[in-house]
Image (cartoon, rainbow, N blue to C red; front, side, top):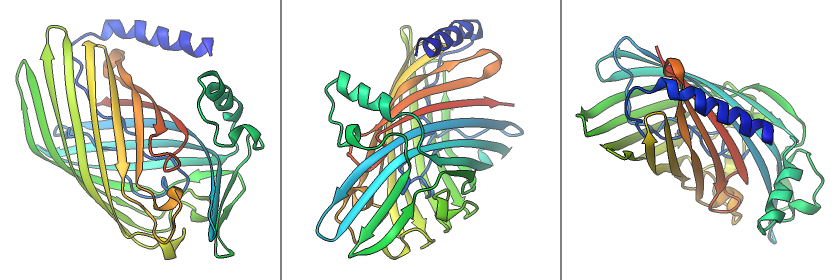
Length: 334
């Protein structure tokens, strides 16, 4: 742990030389990493910024997520135990003023991981509930769901590969800035294609379409910048291969967040991500509960115009998202 703290300190110190302008507060590019949710086209890009004409915005994000939940009732039982690693490369191109197109390509690893003992110790140290994790076998993978005696989902092998690719587009509705403020409003859309292996939960086996309205405002003061941001959208999903008989073909999505930039090279922010249920025909929160997750952390401006996001997320609505996810995001405009 001390090694990672030292690395972070070195990054922050090196960023001081990159001072240029006030730090704009932007959303985390992270989504629900539950193994039965991350296969759908939930929005990662909820920012209201549109890439300038002739420019390319490249991004690389890494999410490491630990999943553990076990629930049952008289008709159903579910167990989600494993770790998900999602590395996403994104590119957005501004082809004319106020318009952009892009692509997102994830690489997904499902496995037993290594975080179980660390999370048990963390919960013990702070008196947090374990939910049965402390007595379960460590560092294993097993995603299972049974209903009325029928095995509907079973995935107990580790694997990796390309996930579901998304084609994206955005149109700026409003963009104004002066020395004291900046306001943006944009419409963004995404088409998720079934390029990942659904049997290994690297994709859903179906096509999804997302449409959302994104907005943000930043105010610049002598003591730093203050930013608010949010989005609201709708996700249309085809049946696909994973629990297709219980799929909700329409879901709502939304985000809201706030941040403070005390200096031009660093900001701190918190963000709530939510979505309505992705499945129906179940009384288990893991499938039919509305999801709400909290991401907290910040951003550091590095030399040469790179921006590094660092965040940790937890499931506010218990069992509807990963227990904990660690997020890193690096981006730069060219």
